[in-house]
Length: 328
Image (cartoon, rainbow, N blue to C red):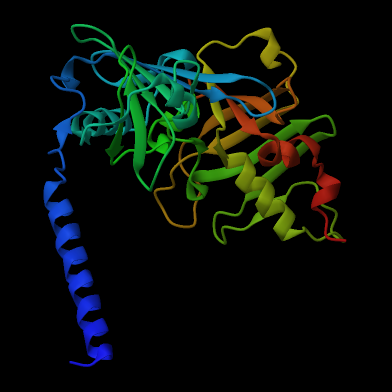
C-alpha cells in the first residue's frame, strides 16, 4: 500500500469514528414528551378574564381589557358590557387548555426580561378567574411562528408553547368585538339627512333606478356622483375603532353634536316602489377624543353603546354641504 492510499484509509477511519460518535451522542439525547401546560384547567369554570398589554408606544399608556361571562355570553366589561364577537373568547380558552410544552427552556430570572416574561415586562399578561384559584399566565416573545415563551406567574420556569400568538390575545376592547358598528343595507336605505356646521344636506334615492340625488339642485346643476355615493356609504356604514361604554357623558359631546345623520330605512315589498313603512335611525357624531388619537365619539339611536370611530371615516359627514355635491 503506497503512502497516498495509507493517508486515504486513515481519513476514512477518522470519519467513520466521528459518524459513530455523533450517532451515539444523538442516542443519548432524550426529548421530553409533551405535557399539558395548564394541568387541570377547566374552561367551563372561567367567568372573568383580564388581559394586560405592554406599555403603549409613545404615550406610555398600558392597555388593558376586562372580559366577563354573564351566564349567556361573553362581554367586554371594561366597555359597558359590549358584546364580544361570537365564539372568540371560547376559542382563546380552548387554545389555552390545549397548550403543551416539552419542559422549561430557562429557569433563571435574569432571562425573564429578555424573553419578555417578567412581572413588569411582557407582551401579554392573562388573569383568568372562576376556577379554584386565579390562573395568571405571562406571554412573552415569539421564537417562531405561533410559538411563545410563557411563564406561569409565581413560578420560575419559562417554557415554549405551540399554537398561540399575542394576536390571539388582544389587550383592547376592539380586539374582541365585531367592528361593524353601523351597517344599514343600501337596498333598505331611502333617504339621508346630514346636519352639520355648514347646514343641512338632504339626499334621496329614486325607487325605480336606485340612483341617489341631492335635493335642492338647480336645473342647471349636475350631481357629482362619486362624492354623493361616498357620502351615502359613510353615512350608512361605520366601523368602530374602540367600544367606549353604555352610558354617554358630557365629554362625548352629544349635547351639541358636530353632525346629526338621519337615515330613513325600510324594506320594499314591491320592486321599484318605496316601502309601505319606514323608520328613522339617528346617528350622532360627537366630540373629537382628547389625546391626539383622531377619533370621534359616535352613538346610533338603535345601539346601546357609544363607540369611537376614526376621523377619516366621518370627516366628510362633518364637512360636506350641498354645494360640494355639485359637479364642477
